[in-house]
Length: 456
Figure 1 (cartoon, helix red, strand yellow):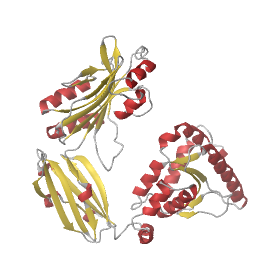
Figure 2: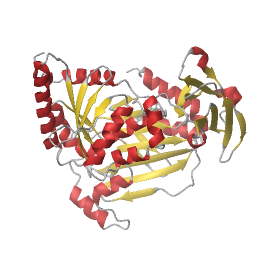
Figure 3: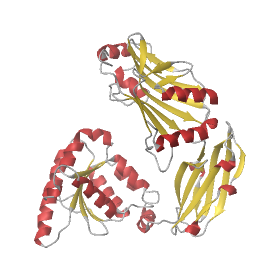
Figure 4: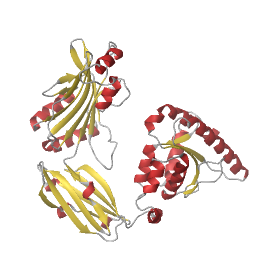
């Protein structure tokens, strides 16, 4: 099978960046099959940063082998390592393990979770497990051996969590090697700023990557026209850093710039895209006004992420929706939605807020009842619009896995702590709420039941 464009692109980036890599960081899970270890899962990161060498962390029981290896590689050794990886194995000085059936492999190039802000090209090598594989694994025996070992762990869940494989307490069902390539040059975000039309940047670059291989693009707002886009890489002043890196600094005056978008690439491959916001200006007038009362958004963030009670969360949600461009109401009274939201184009949403995960179904019942009642009332007055129900829970989405299908069945949109964080990060350039509403309604229409009880 020919590799996809995305896979070809990954290998092009690797060939371009490989001379800057110093260390490979490998975490893995293997189980015993007969007299040898067989790979289940591995996470591999190639880094241009030099780390303090430490001995491998390896934990073995009679049936399980889990570990992490940080190893310095030459370019030739790195090339051999990546070749072994394509064959379904991890081959280093300290260990060599392969999938149970390396003849049955597939390759995939996923999009990184942090894109488009931070680009880390990724590749996954997957293996179809043999049907009898893992049937002999004894969980109780392994848990007992881990708890009584010289380096004690409280069972499989504790061990896998320690090595970054989650805390589910079960072996992975999908056999794969995941690879990430960290870029050889990057912005040092803590030293980059935009204030009163003055832009300051600092870039860290692996020494073998020559300055001319870097491209730094600038896009200015509030008028992102062609003449406000420019290449500014030639303005960088380079000096020697430490640990095999050079440091570059840039300072320039901009005209009437509230937000600057920086686009850093190496050999034409994206490494970082980042927005810098002038604290004295904003593209969002509501945010500018709100900062007069809450300069660092301290109270807003506290009410949304660490509220003392649900009432604080309700007030914070109403404020957040206001800053995103909606008209929001936190109505008085007990028999009302926590927040009522209307978009600029008059679409409406009812929001229930909770700090708990054990009352999701109770809150869902309230939302559905109020939606149906409000739609009936609007219909009597000739108002015909869709009403969205939103349940906002300021807990991680992982804590609500068992409730996702229930909420979808009742056409209720779930917003979690991750969504709150994303919204706070996008207040400077708020999304179009009406477009978001249309997208969510269209998504619900594709489900196996009619939207809001209407026939399709």
